[in-house]
Image 1 (cartoon, one colour):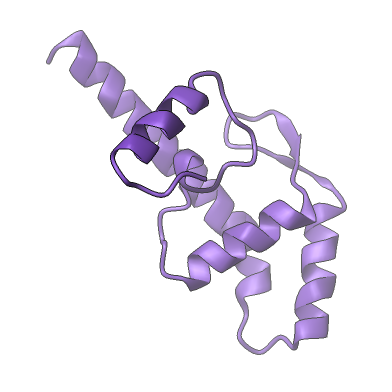
Image 2 (cartoon, rainbow, N blue to C red; image 1 turned 60 degrees about the vertical axis):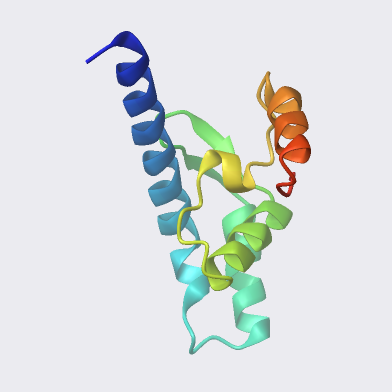
Length: 108
């Protein structure tokens, strides 16, 4: 296994860890028995506090971000990875966006 393979595997593992964390965070709001008003209360409650992130650091998550994750999950995007719906743009994201745009892919 080359260094590039190890790096790729580590990135995949990190993306999966983030996706599972996001999935677990929004799980209470995914209950089909909730009315829109009840779901809104759950989402506001989630957004109103900080959460232990996948790396162990405490992170705030905005209501807008939670709504985006819920929409993505409902749309069938089961992998809520860092690249699929992150609200924080890490260095290099602009380059990735340019590459996606050049390839005709949607840029978020």
